[in-house]
Figure 1: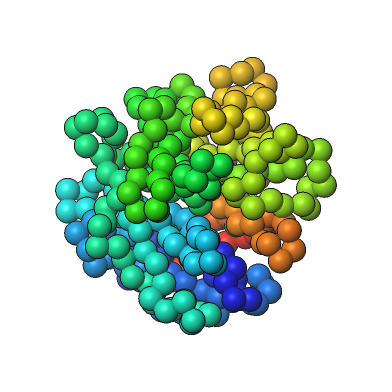
Figure 2: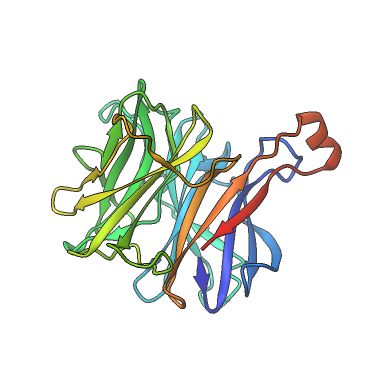
Length: 292
């Protein structure tokens, strides 16, 4: 996310060691996407809706340049639920403090919606439709069918689940860290578009991180904004292989639109092949890489 001339990178972090657990949102800022300064944690367990961990999510710029973060929290029942946090002080370019909504969780598995409470996570950056409703995707699965559950909201607080997912595919397992954004049809790869842009000359990209394979895949296709359906040119069930961002160890990627340069920047997590013992010995595990 870019705010008041600074890039903000939020990432999953265990402050107690180099292994998975005790997850908070670490926060670093940069002027050039190369040199980063770490700040205090932005989001950490403090509510019932995230008391067992603050997992992945995304930032969205609301009208007036106001940032908002939707993220997955783990509640006392170890259910995965979706929460909202906003900056405490918009005049602070570092955005050092974040305030959680008292209405959290905003989206949660229930008996009525039959969402898998252990497979419901990683909200995307939201986009604004022509009807004035915000839309966001949450990764999930039903048995072996991976899906991107779609929610809609008029005010970014009260969210209603759509009757159908934006897209799904049998045999793919859990879809983690989905990403959904527009690209200009036949445009230079360096040209980016704001997440809410749509039109005749626009295609869309749906990226998912498959928990089963630990790889990132993406589909290019058409988004019917009236029906909220994404139709890929070639999908997981077709004979043609789907595309991957990287063919090495690369996972849980996320893009941002940089309006200052009209480009989309891709960040990803490279999980090393070191053993847990080696990670503990060196005191860190994994690196972040970016593409433009």
